[in-house]
Length: 424
Image (cartoon, rainbow, N blue to C red):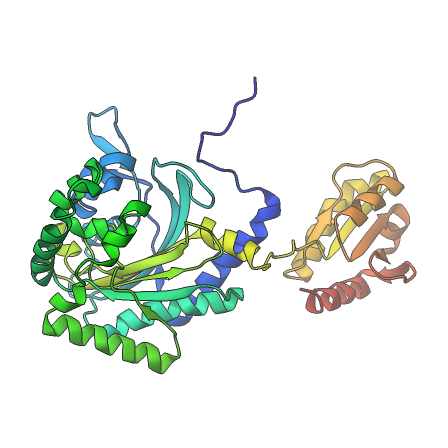
């Protein structure tokens, strides 16, 4: 019997790899341009890290985490998100002591929820974190960076939604107003919604239950409860985005599902992916470093869902063509076969960046040429015993109606340089 993949944990096959690489390359190019450095993190942490940071009452902690007891008796969890791990790593290694950090990371996350289109139990994120910066300028910077990634990828549908959650102190009054408002709804709330109302009423605003849509639309708006500093911070952020030419919509119902968010929150959303419209979400988490044992440290970040961005690229027709080899080395003759690998390595060293595939399957000259053609290579390099004796190569164009030509090894190197420099 075949072993099947675990439900919700998908393989990324070679035909899809070009899209994934395009997203990762675009993100890294933007990070490099803005001076953000990579940090690599373990996929497993002590469970306490996530229960303390994300919040005991969240669906993630209560229902979705992959948590188990290891052989030492410790409770450990496969990370459901990366921000808490970034903060933990910074505290573990003293990265935040009188220092500011601009960091990024990427990798798999794990949540046990119902798999659906572009939403899986093992999913992949790219995270950006700016730690130690209090002003709205860094809020604008991280949002602008995400916009630059969409530009590099040629994506047109993502649109930006903004809100401010204010500070925990000003949210206390808002929580009371929400509890009073939703409590008056009576039987409209199911048991889960009533539990959310008791523990954290802001989460009701993020409910996807269609029965609550009209009720949520009439709920009090958080912006009326913001303190002066939070309101000024948000106003300055919108001015900075206006100056940078980044369009946005203020969404007063936008909240984030994790307890550590404060002040600025935002999402990039699209109508092209159905119900799972958010492709990048983030905000400020000014209290998280202190919550996990450090000093009061302002911070902001975002997480981009790779599966969702890849799906969106396909929906918008941005599928990346596979990059075929520039050349395919066909070998004929016993001595040529013996020395072919060394010659292929010489060519790769002489022509850095050349995509050169060497035929390793053997067989007749005709069958090797067929494989060369199927590979999509521009050129077939032919090495036979005669070419070997003359220190030469025959080159046969595979995408143009041109004759096969014998070149000295130096001339062949020059031809490969030309092809490398004039092809994608």
